[in-house]
Every structure is written in C-alpha cells, then in structure tokens.
Image (cartoon, rainbow, N blue to C red; front, top):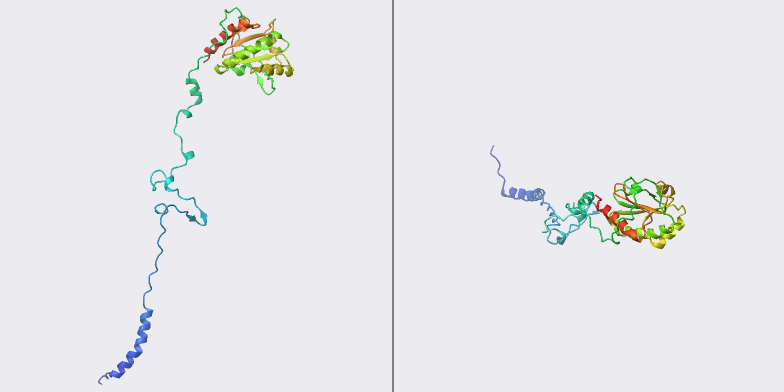
Length: 267
C-alpha cells in the first residue's frame, strides 16, 4: 500500500495548531533569572568613612575607637587602658622595709644646749632593764608601756601636778622631744595623778606632745627613789643608760648629750 502524502493545505493547518503549543512550552521552560545576592557590609574599621556603631541582636556594642584614639596607624588595635597595664617595677614598688634598712640615717640637728660636764648624771638603776608597766593614757583610749617603744630612745619621766620642779622641767623635756622625735626619740611622762583634769590643763597650757600616762604611783615606787621628780634615758634595747633627779637649766646640756649619743647608737 502506498503511503499517503499530506497536502500543502494539511501542513498549513497543522502548523497553525502547533504554534501556541510551542510558545507555551517555550515560556514554561525558560530558566529563572538568578537571584542577586546582597553585597556584604563593609568592614567598619577598614571603611574609609570612619567608625560605625554595630548592632548585635538589638543591643548596642561599644564603638570602635576613632583613628585618633589608636596607637599608630588605623589598622592597629586600640591601646589598652592605663589601669589594665602592669606598671614596670621601679623604686616606688620596692620593699619599704628594705628601703628603710638601706636608707642612711639623717644626721642629728645641732644641739639646743651647751654640752654639760656630767655632774648632773646619777647612777641609780643605770645598766638595768627598765621596769615594765601598763598605764592608761591621758585620753583614756590607749595603754602606755615602755615595751611599746623598743628601738627608740625613750626619755622616761616620773612627775605629778603637785610637784613644782616637775612642772618646770617637763616643758623643757617636751622641747627636746619635738627636736629629736623624727630621729628616734620618745618622751613618756608618767604622772602619779589619777584625776586627768589637772593633767590635761597643764598639757593644754604648755601644748605638750609627750606621751602622758596616768596613775603611775606604783610604777614610780618600783625604783624606790627618795626624791621626786626623776627621769631615765632608755636605749633602743630597753636598758637604762642615764638617770637624773630634777633637771634644771644647768643639767639640760648633760641630758641632751646622753640623748644624742643614744640616738647615734640606734640600728
């Protein structure tokens, strides 16, 4: 059987039917346009426009430092706060005890009084250890004891407000104390008074800076002295190196000499 060939009219009708189908197929097969990805945000440090404030999950983060706040160029890390830097070791951090041990002792100032001839020096109790006591201070807030002044030269004076020679010599002792206390001297004035009012009145009148102890009758009686007042110079080891009865103007030179010699012997 011979095949039947389509006529030209048949081909024309078939072509018109296929055009819409191909157009639909072409439209349906067209590839989608690529989605454009957003460009990454510029680095705030590298951005030539300057620093920006970053937002992290709704919380504001501290701004990057401005170029003027950086150490060197703008790419370097910001310099740490001064409080976070460990200071370099220097003299200010040296051990204060070691510094005190190596620091040379300052020379003593010029004496107030002319050197004495030694006639005012007494021998009682010299060479003995000072007898300890614990007495209330004039203010009543502290306890005064010779043991609290080791490694210092102590002028230990026993006195009372009813004793006129005592009231004469004590201001002079206080004058010596003011001059030498920064060099290692302490003045401890033990009164036999129990009432602080007259003692305070005398201290205020003469502006004394001495360490004043009250109720010292038993402490004074421990030395069995027939006269009043009397005083000791006690060295840094607690040993009595000099003794005095009433110290008048002619005896102040002897007293100051002993104090100076004892201060020179301090370690």
